[in-house]
Image 1 (cartoon, rainbow, N blue to C red):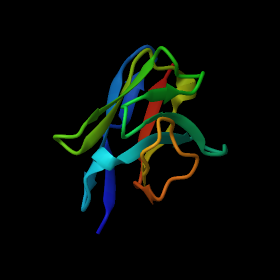
Image 2: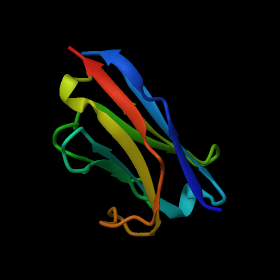
Image 3: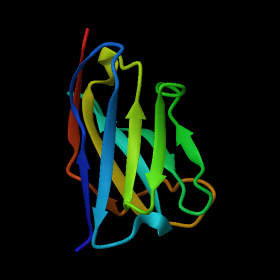
Length: 123
């Protein structure tokens, strides 16, 4: 059974850091593009970042560019989202998603989703 499990969320003060993990089981991540998304209360889900499978290219939403870094560790079958300089507006449930995809850019749609991990940034 293909499964993604996020972890690492929690409560942090503004300006602090968190590292989210997205661990895969039942399949190997190296052939999958991985995306991170978030959904704040009362808002639609938004894309945050992604990393390709083939080239390891990374992409970021403008709202997080320069503060967040996505990294994949194929040996651990895990993708990380390092979040620095966190702001209250980063508060949301963060989801990782995967899709078997070999392009140099990230796909628009994903086929596998985790259950999410909550992040709360206090001011």
